[in-house]
Length: 290
Image (cartoon, rainbow, N blue to C red; front, side, top):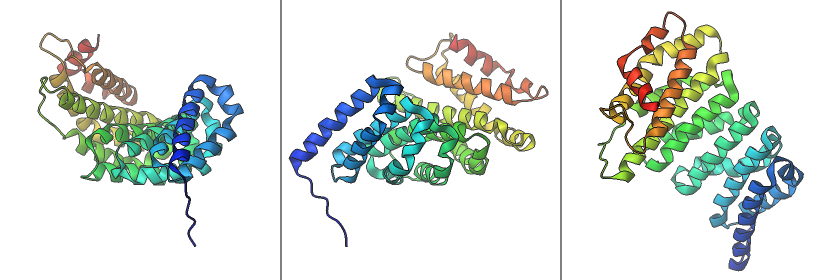
């Protein structure tokens, strides 16, 4: 027999105010304060998530992510309780901003508890890859979804090997996405900016996360996808660096992420392979970041 949770509009309004206050308090309390009141905070979050007050659910997920950032690995003790709701929204990629908030919260949790997120990774990575493969996923949801894959890879390290092939294949497909660069349409150009930054962050996360994998396996992964990664960086260099070497306005974060990936690739390559980075477009990109 199903249980009907009936909540009046006035109660839902109070819940929304309450979670807003708690979200602000978590940011102010800091790690020790959040840890001291952790059980009380998570119980309020769970109570609201269990209610039909979907308007407040997004704030609950965001607050959970903030909690994870503040208390770090200790947040893993709350994961069994928060996961049914967080995982539910990760699966519901058509929920717009709530799905995006769930993805961002998952990134926060992955960075906070690192390897302790492993038991949830089959579901998380499956949701992220399915979302990125879906034609109905909103464009604005793609960058945080891509970045989340990188955060998961960094969190679980060499154990990301089981997800490496489908992730790298999807990233390769994502690098082919293009749209006209028209500086007169800021929203369009910033959308591509965010998307390309998300791809770069995901690549960096996978490369750095898998450095502790068996050497031969790691070397093969880098070798197989090196041409795609360098080709993508070349496209960025040719697109975002002006003739005078300066970056286009608003694209500094993409160039920084590109340089970050170049550093990660340089550290992953052997002495006999690093010459692949000695190219004109890499030099142009690096000069654009100075």
